[in-house]
Amino acid sequence: MTVTRLQILDILKAVFPFRKLKPAQLEIVADHFGTAFFEQGQVVYEEGTAADTLFLVLGGSVRLLYRNREFEENQPMWKLRIGDFFGFDMLVEGGRHNLQAEAASDLTVLTINREQFEDLCTQIPDLVESLGMLYDAHNLAVSVNLPWRDKDEAIYFIGRRHPVLLLVRLLLPAFSGAIFLSIVLLWLTSSKNVVVPIVVLGLTLVGLALWVLWDVVDWRNDFSIITSERVVFQERIVMLYDSRHESPLNAILSITSETSLLGRWLSYGDVIVRTYAGLIVFPDLKHPELVEDFLNAEWFRSRSGIAREEKLERLETVIGQRIGTREAPPPKVAGQVKTDQNTQLNTLLNLLANMFQLRFEVGGAITYRTHWYILLTKIWIPTLLFLFLQTFLIARIARWTSFMSIGGALAFVGLCDLILGVWWGYKYLDWRNDFYMVTDDQVVDVNKKPLGHEQRRSAPLRNILSISFERLGIWGLILNFGTVRIKVGETELTFDNVYNPNEVQREIFKRMTEQDYKQTQDKIADEERRLADWIEAYHRVRAVKTIQPGRNDSADDGQNKGKIE
Figure: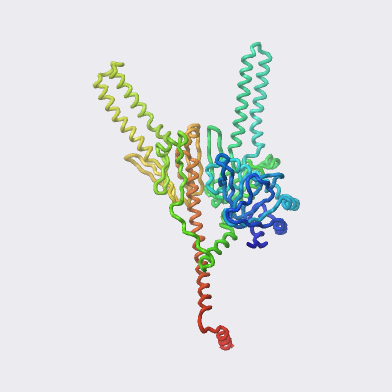
């Protein structure tokens, strides 16, 4: 495959950090890049090998894999497409690849080695900081587990709050600890009984250590994330709060950055993403202007659809199949599509979730019920009364009490059990009749009172603007339940108190992306078919003209020319 300079310049104009360079600078960048080609399945580089080349996908796709030490095999990390960089470990002297890269299809890449990269950065110094940001994000993405991420969904950027914010938070325990320790030490030196001051000193040190640990863990648990499909802000407060707010890239309206005076001095600030459903704020990031520029580039890519080179590849395939120069792909075998299900029974919570059927799937539609903890809050009073009455009846029959005759006790308990049974059954049905459903094309919220009012709300998946979830309080975190909020236009659907809201949010987003992908592919396929019809018709006309017997185009042209003259 031949790569033209125009193709190289086209891809450089579209990707961060080259998209804002001047034409003369783009020419310099293009001069430093070479090209390489890999067949499908070919290894580009292996994990642990010396990193000396940075790659930019020009055609095809590449899959990054990591080594699973437990099973001693490579497992997929994510998949990269046209316009994506990989091989960031080259940016550090003596760096080694922390993942393996393998061509997922026939692959064309632009390459730049260390020597060329250093020369390029000498001519365009701003590239060092931009690519350094991507290098830091890549290393953090490899080390952090994000179970909500879809298969092949690439992590382009992930960042925490600036470390200076952690230092500011640690000033309070440091200042408080200094004062309190000074008081305890004075007490220790002036007291005759040193046992109590030593105990207080020990408790103080333990308390300060726990305070510092809390602040550090809380800082480490908040992430601002940009993937190939969405923007996400994930926030966790240990034992109190867990939430994730996200929006598809194509639902973004605008992107801005804000910094304070201190932020400008230390180079940190907020990146504010305005979507149809509101704001998603990436707080206190290093180099917010670079993150803003990078997100703008990914936003532009999501709106522009597949890259020009990918479109040409697809058209070549479709037209080649129509006119017989390429073989048609083998038909897809039905029944190979798998759906992710939370069927593991390795924990008590999952066992209880399956026992109460908090999630089940029928005919492709996933149904969720509110957590069994909510059922317990509804039935605990009639359950306790029932147990109390049975205890009273046993005590009366055993003659541990003489209150009420045995016959009267049997009649009284029997009548109360009937009332409590109706009460308990009503509460159970009230819990069971409230459910939430996700189908291939819509989300549904059903709220039904036994023998009473039923409310059913639904919204198409294509109209969803954002999805977020929250786990509030210690019980929500321990028992893993919370509320998933789905923004649809000016209204909001809520899946209240569902088990594992993280997974519920992921499954809804997965259905959204699958439907969006299917609609996009159908639209592209229709356009390709129409163009292929034109090409095929032209090909037939040319073929008929070639085989027509007794036709003399030169004579006809001469006759026509004579008539015109």
